[in-house]
Structure formats: C-alpha cells, structure tokens
Amino acid sequence: MHGWDMNLAQAKEMQLSLARKIVTNNEGINPHLVAGVDISSPDSQGIARGAVVVLSYPEFGVVEAKTAEGKIAFPYIPGLLSFREAPLILAACEKLCHTPDLVLVDGQGIAHPRRLGLASHLGLFLNVPTIGCAKSILCGRHEPVGEEVGCRAELIDNGEIIGAALRTKIGTKLIYVSVGHKIDLASALYWVMKCCRGYRLPEPTRLAHLAAGGNLVFEPSYQGKLFS
Image (cartoon, rainbow, N blue to C red; front, side, top):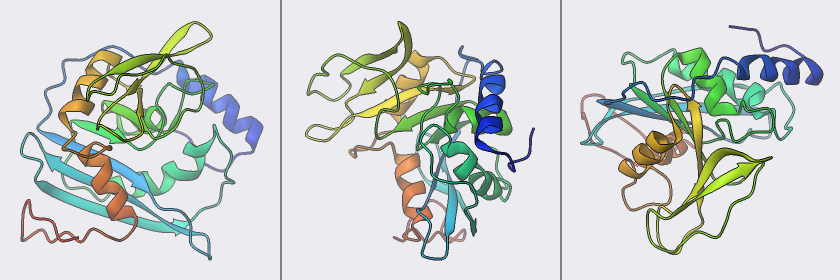
C-alpha cells in the first residue's frame, strides 16, 4: 500500500489520505478465527518483537502464534505509532498459515486525531475487520463509566463519536474500543466483550502481549494448549 520511509509531515499526510478509505460499517462478521496483535518495547539495541496470535472462536484454542523481530526505525511520537509498530506486526502476520476473520489490536482505531490509528492502518493492509483495543485515550472525552462489567460510555471528539470507554473487569482500568476497519462500533464492542475471559484485556491481545514479550511459547503439536 505504501512504504514506511517518510518524514513526520509525510506520515501525517498519509494518515489523512488513508483515513478516507476506512470502512466503518458492519460487514456481517461471524468469526471462526480471531487474532490479536501487539509489539514489545525496543531493547537496548532498538530491537522489538511484533506478535500475532490466532485463536479459534468460541473455544479460544491457540491455532497459531508468530513473531517477527527487527530494529525500530521510526521515532516514538504519539499519533504516529503505526509507522513505528506496523512494519513488525505485518511481518509477523505474513508468516501466518491461517487468515483470521477478525483482528483485535492493542492500539487505537479511528479514536485518533487524524482518524487512523494502528488498528485502522493494519486493517487497510490486511483487508480484514480490525478493532482498536487501547489501554489509554489519545483524543476525545467520555462520561463516567459504571463499575459493572459491560458498562460503557461514548468517546467523543469535536462532536464526533470515535469510540467507547468500556469496563471489561470490575476493579480495573477501562479499555478504549474503536472501529479499526470493516466493522461498526456496536459490533466492535460486542466482539471485544465476547473475547474477554476474566481479564482486563480481551484474550487475543492479552496473549499477543505475552508472545511479544517472549512469555508465550506455542507448540503446534499441542493444538490449543498454552505454555507460558
């Protein structure tokens, strides 16, 4: 779709251009394979690890787990993290033997100043429905959220609904769900809740976080079994 070697102004212009291609309606998702993606922080040498974990749904058995390591070239700039993180995540996804029906991303979707966070950017490259499941707000405000699991409040930026703050576990911080690509917000919230298994983070991104940190070892001969 495009290369990754660009300056800050070019990156922002690319986001504005790609944001116009994002599909924010539901295409009738009925997933059998759900993936989560994440990336580790760079080590002292600037090397990071991108990870993708594919789970069967609704069993949540691990079907596949792939990683890709490389040096991070793009600087850490809020709002431009996809240019820093997407190349390694896409490199991991290229190793997959199975194509997921839905991808949950540890990052923003359209809940982004230029409406193109990591989940949206990846959705365009992968051409599959993606959901942003971020741990913090990049832009927008919301009303207080109830303490019960499933409570949510619309995330609004300049009068536009860009996502929702969602309670996935009692006594923990909220997560921030937004449309990535090829899905609507109601469906995104539905599938995030369906993928939660007692933790703050939905199971696909929780396991991807472990894989990116080198804390998830998956042996294909033990289909559906985790060693962590």
